[in-house]
Image (cartoon, rainbow, N blue to C red; front, top):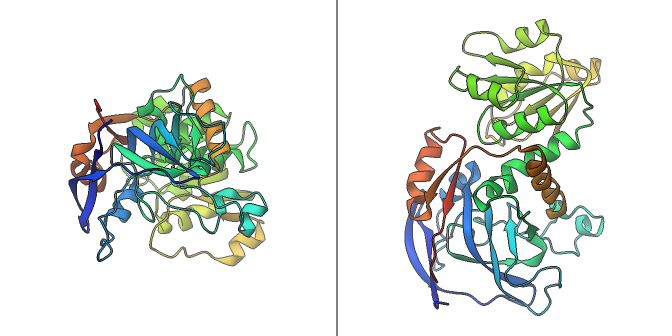
Length: 342
């Protein structure tokens, strides 16, 4: 094995450059992963815009990581073995001792690392991660298809799985991007009637191909009126960070209906309390889940072939990948691959 590895690091906000670093040794609770693939997520854009800390190496983005364990620390439990293929998502490992961890809410750990933000991520040939972040990857899934499920997949899968929705319920998916195209597939395979609400007709055909029953182009018609005319919906899964549209669609919820927020934007959400109170509607958020729950999402994706639509690029082209994502040109997830001989 070589003594150095290549990585794409942030040099100035929004710009990455190739660098070489010594391959790090894992700590007692860590593993060293040789990376095969890393998905490109919208959160990577925000991470890459943060200026490097003075005197510190540039941060390496990326949090949809799949690779093989090459070394492990002395305290890493035996369920993780050298050579095993594993994944790491947005959550870089829980601490096991804070109050959320002690209550079993590991994904809400107060001391959670965040790959690409508070620690180095996956736009690289190697990465060191806490063993509590590790996710077992089913052998039947390719690394390129598994990578986006570690963030976009588990976020939408668990939002629907924990929503309280039952087979036959009506679910509206707001947005048809990296998260939305996964939500449509999961919702269809879970037995829901699926309506996609999006801007423009360019994604209408693929929405139906992935399982949508209805499509609303908000450039052509009023989303709220159309949903109401179709009988309303029991659940709204908001995958797009569009606070104005979320607020506009809330009155389409049936009594005791629920809206679930997944897309994190920067605009406040304006809600009329009476509209929520009078019909006992619920507005809630949903975060990516624990490693164990992500493994459920991976298994479901394999069993029911709810796979991300991906395009692959070598990780040396990470700047191009981020630019395509920023311009809205990704269809639907870009996955960076590392072709290594070392």
